[in-house]
Image (cartoon, rainbow, N blue to C red; front, side, top):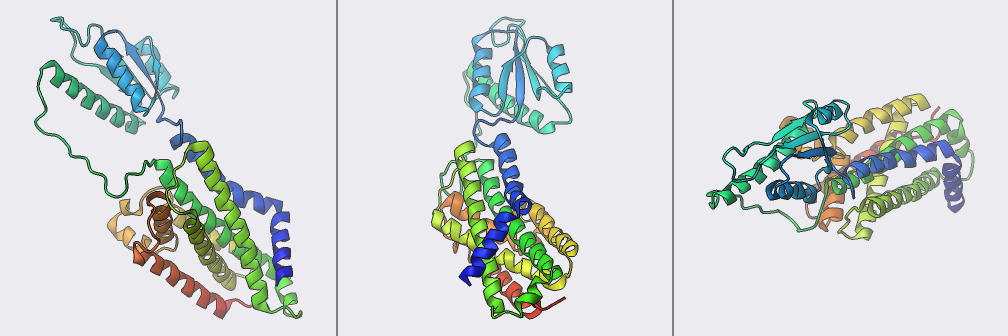
Length: 360
């Protein structure tokens, strides 16, 4: 079996094209989201045209820069800035009129915010920030205190987390799912087309040796994938991992075994490489967008969440995020591990019943 393991591992490494895409597909997501939401990222560039040059306007600009939501540049003319918005070179422009924040009788009390109506999120974030800042400024001018306020409480740990941390955990599950399901389904179908599986039955090699060697060799690839994604996320984009790495890798191996069994299950029902590719894609693409890779599954409509929470990837990602971001035990929510183990049993039973090395 050790010889089979080394042979399978060499075949995986020598298949340069398959190896490249199995590694690059999740890494592309890591870099894309890292550049947008990781360290030193911002929500875009805005310009501020300060005609007032008063302590009030300078304090506002400093607050905008300190918030680190957007990259703040200095603008000169509102018309020129609006043209930059139309060309998508900047996201918005803030015009602070002359005498703003002074005690002069004719001092203006409004500032202008212009943004692309096709990018409503930027307008919402900026208007909310400015509205809160100007409200506080109004209270200071009037020497008054607000009557109502918010008592902001965070549920869970006090760990510093970002959206990139959330997505990075999702990409870990995505990498395991894609490489395992597609790799096994397509690989076994190609072996069947080339009659490699049938030839194995004529050798002293036991079928379960072959399957165990195939799974073990791909687990090596999965562990390398996870290590590469975590290294890039932490080193280049300042991702936060607060949980135990050994537990995290244990969950990764559990997920890889689950998805490899699903790959064997697909290979049991399809006979050609093209069919396996189509069937694997039909399974992985919906899970990629519905199972919580890029956004929390509880944001889905209730009727859809009822089904999505039982997909193989959804509970796995909940456990990975619980361990990586909160330092929780994988058994913190027992239903997650139960769902994953149930899928493993289902896939194992179907694969054992349907998958045959001698199938043509």
